[in-house]
Each structure stands twice: as C-alpha cells, then as structure tokens.
Image 1 (cartoon, rainbow, N blue to C red):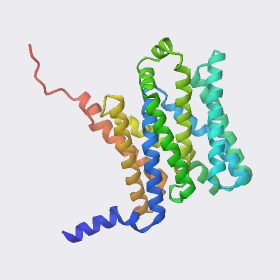
Image 2 (image 1 turned 135 degrees about the vertical axis):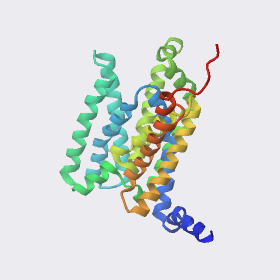
Image 3 (image 1 turned 30 degrees about the horizontal axis):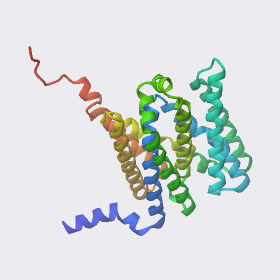
Image 4 (image 1 turned 180 degrees about the vertical axis):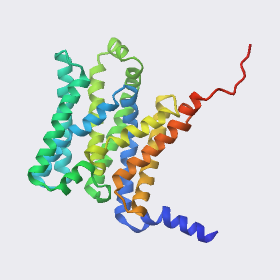
Length: 295
C-alpha cells in the first residue's frame, strides 16, 4: 500500500517538485486556462468559434516581425502579435460594415494573408526549428517574463469579463437586443475581440500560434455537453482546461513527447468522452428514455 502511494506521488507530484521548468509550465498553463476558457465559452455561444482559430493565425505576422528584429525575445513577439491581431480584427470588422461582405468571409481572407505573411517572414531569417517554435510554442521554456505577461493578461481578462458580463450574456441570447436598448453594443463587441486577441497572445507563449486556440475552444465545447447556464459553463470550462494542462504536462514528461500537443490532446480526450457520455451527449440523447409515459 505504501509503495503504491509512493509510486503515485512520484508520478503526479515528482515532476513538479523536482524541476523548476515543470513548475513554470504548470503555473503558466493554469493561468492561460483560467482566462482563455471563459472567453472560449462566449466565442462558442456567439457562434464565433472559428473566429478564434482565425485570430490565432492572424497574430503570426506581428510575432514573426518581433522575432525577425529581436530574435526569440518574448516582449517584442508579444506586442507584435497583439498589434497584428488587433489590426486584423479591426480590418475584418470594418470590411464587414462598409462592404457587402460578411465578417466571417472578411476574417478568413485576412487570416489567410496573415498566415502566409508570417511564415514567409520567419523563413527569411529563421530555421525550421524557429518556425516550429513560433507555430507550436514551448510551454516548458516559459521564463519569468512570460509568466508575468500571462498573469497580467489573465488578470485583465477576468476583470474585463466581470464588467461586461451582463452585456455579453445579453448579446449571446439576442444580438439585436443590446443594440436596440443601448449604444454600448459595438464597444462591447470590439472589447470582446480585444480579449480574444490578448488571450491568444498569452497562449502563443506556451502553445504557439496554431495550438493556442485549442485551450480556448475545446474546454468550452466540452462544457456545453454538461452545463446549461453561461456561468456554469465558464466554471466547468476553466476546470476542464486546468485538468488538460495538468494531464498533458504529466504525459509529456513521462512519455517524452511534445508538451503543447499533449495538452491539446488531453482536452480533446475530455471532449470525446463528454460527446459520448455527458447528459447532453450522443448516448443520452439517442438512447430511448426509461421514463414511463403518463397518460
């Protein structure tokens, strides 16, 4: 019995107790989960899940220019990604409002241009290893500067969500209602897009531009199978994202595989299980009910 407990402790606690890089990866991952999962819930409820994916690609040119000028320095790459993401979000929104094109088509056009531009910029100076770092990140290489940046973005995100919570919920239920009763609708919309970009930049530090959206969308989509209210979905999505970070880091450490994909695959496993077994999943809704009908 004692030997089994010791083995379990070595498996679950040992990596984080012995290695500082695992401690930093866990702290950074949990902070990203805390702020990005609620943002993902509102993206999903507003039917903008693919917008998050597009924005994740949109930050690549700015991060690549930061890399081209300063190398793998975290601050220039972060501010470059933030500027590029804001530029794409504003550009797509403006095209949707002054032309006949819808916002999803404008966003798709901008993000494809951004993705190609970012890869070309990285290839001008960096190697294939640098390109892989930008695209997929390295959560095990998080330093103090990165943790401060991620913690600041997490705090700002949670505070902003508390302020605009009621407006976001109202816009999810009826997008036209908020515009009809208040002039704050466009401001709330662009503030929310800013939060999306900020959290993608925070996730970019650990998971890269291609995978940062995974910890935002997958836990939110999983929580949809279990919870009904916006608050319960946000709370459950945060818990699922944190479990994914912990499980992914442990699997990555013991199996010696890439940490970023391991975290996203852990979130994907939770999604598949919930898709099948949750109260609002496939089995529960497709199997005949055992409840007797009352005349």
